[in-house]
Image (cartoon, rainbow, N blue to C red):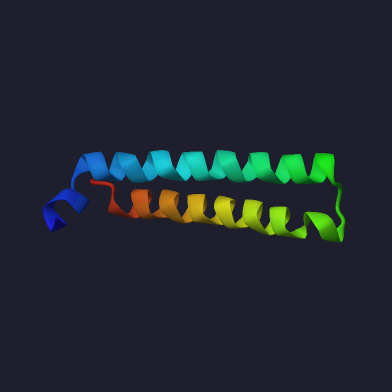
Length: 69
């Protein structure tokens, strides 16, 4: 398993996951703010969107840190 996690394919998989998490988080944020507005009812969606974007940024940073030079 360790050999797979150091492979280029796994790095690209992390990068793709990061992009998808950022896109999905941005979409959730946009839908919450557009549909509900900035009210208490939108708080779970806003937290979910921010968490997805943050997870995507963490995946991107992991890809950039492990990328072969």
